[in-house]
Length: 258
View 1 (cartoon, rainbow, N blue to C red):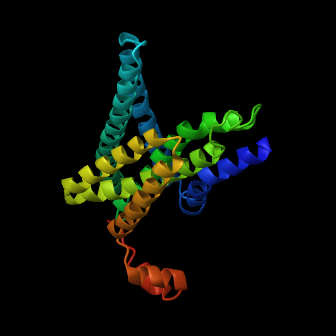
View 2: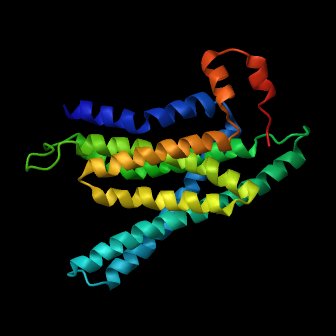
View 3: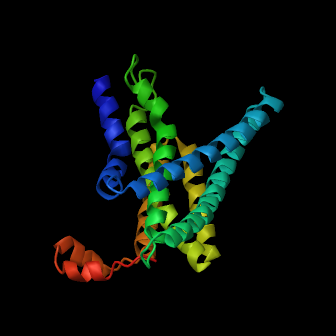
């Protein structure tokens, strides 16, 4: 039973992201490099937020439950703000890197477009975020022990896996919307990404009332996915053509790097 829980939750959490990686990134070495770099940037943001939170806990009153809860909320908000700050820093770095690649390239177009960079870096952020979110939970899922034996929810592992999947996909959508907003200098869209990230992170305080956290998170994920689709240049016509697998010449002609 423990093995089925482990593999089932692993595939739920990382299945869509791994499929996207295999079909859209793995064959392009440049995309793989940018994905790993994006994961590294997220890791640095986590390191900084963890350092600040650790120092805050050490100097706080550990006997005060209210103070410890406040520090937990502070840590979540700080972590989100640092993640988005490093996303912006990575965007600026990628712009410089892309200009350098264009100067070295013999072609007139950039070897990888900003939209592709946004998607790849967002998936890199999501992979690393998902790994740190669920790796300890997956380790506990192999046993020993039984979830819910003391009256707690038996859906802990399953809910954690679905939340991790949502967070990974949200990071990908946030990356696309964030980069597009920076390109067009739509700072209200950047603020919307940051606020939605804060909302999703704070929704986890609803646990173990998993319905109160999962349902709003998936609603936000759907809305951000639609926004990212249109930010990436998508349209209903393109979607219909893609799903019907017709007029491939039209799709190729309308796929131009920015």
